Length: 337
Image 1: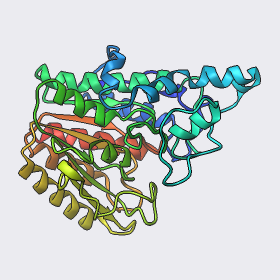
Image 2 (image 1 turned 90 degrees about the horizontal axis):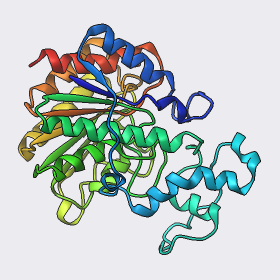
Image 3 (image 1 turned 135 degrees about the vertical axis):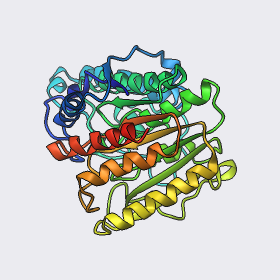
Image 4 (image 1 turned 90 degrees about the vertical axis):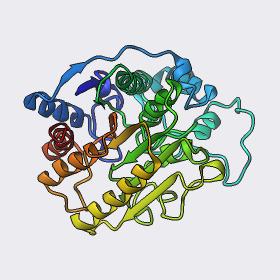
């Protein structure tokens, strides 16, 4: 298994502190160390991809904002170089958003979905290099690899067409799926098994029928992102039926989680995709009662789908168990072949 590693991950929070979503800087390092200890594959640094590749998923004005936000923030006042950039104003609910406002803070609110995801000096470099990992990992499938792993920080599945939040800025899973489509595949499936719903990924593909999005996650009535991820959300327009949400109670237990996985896999097989992208979180265990061996089973079940697969890391809580759980999925996949 080829693993594309984002060496700039530590820059995202600026000071190396735990992120607001329990997504910690050391989660990637622990996962990488465990991956290398088991000798599951080769670790490589990604090649940079052109900005136009990112524009296949995110809007040009949003990408321009992310690239320039920190320098614009510092230009307001040099003292800002020691502060995180957070939004202070948003468009009122239901307001039509047309032209991008001239006011800097109005632009921040235009593109931010929460006030707990700071932009810092290293945000663009870290997010862009993570996106490079995802696109490189997808391209490697087209070059004959059976499976790849994009080990990146910050995570991506909470980033939508032109909004950052939940610790995410660029949607790595969506970028991987879109690259596979652009490279000639007709149907791609995305299976999101991170603890929280990947509402950004859902939003990007919600009205499209060439990408099937399936998600197993905490019930959004009690967990982030709160406003998306309900079972009734099944897609719209041409994409109706191409979204499946399987929200679970936090104390549901492993048996119910695996029943949801089987439901997702049956739906996935019926869709007959040419490749699979897996949003893989290192924090699945808290609340669902999954144990170490369960993660090997998860990898084995995904392998039995028989698809070229890109695993995309969606963050973790920094505990040794989160790194072990992530790598257990990868080992289960590899050994099931």
